[in-house]
Length: 153
Image (cartoon, rainbow, N blue to C red; front, side, top):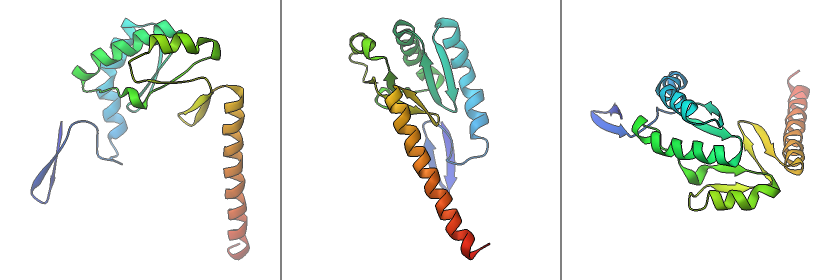
């Protein structure tokens, strides 16, 4: 828990850092290293972390084991997984099995795809839709920049 003093009053934060704090990434890395190592030793699922966002990948059984370990070992190490924010991206032929295995966890399951750390994971159609959206955004930004360049060469 962190304490912040504002105008003589205390504000308590149960977890995390102040938004934009320069040391936030270092603090997350140091604080979460024991959890990452523990999960690495207890599960063969691949894991990827960015700040306090955890990702597990691999066969469904391995991901399920990793998720259970994360839920069990996270809170004592001040990490609280939120299943409602989690997405499991699976191949269409694995969807039924995934729904069975992860029933009651609150984890969202999709066969289409999801954005992950600025990239697209999932089906070819999701990837194409995601990239098309990005290209449209970039074209709009380049057009806007060209308009500014006319008056501000």
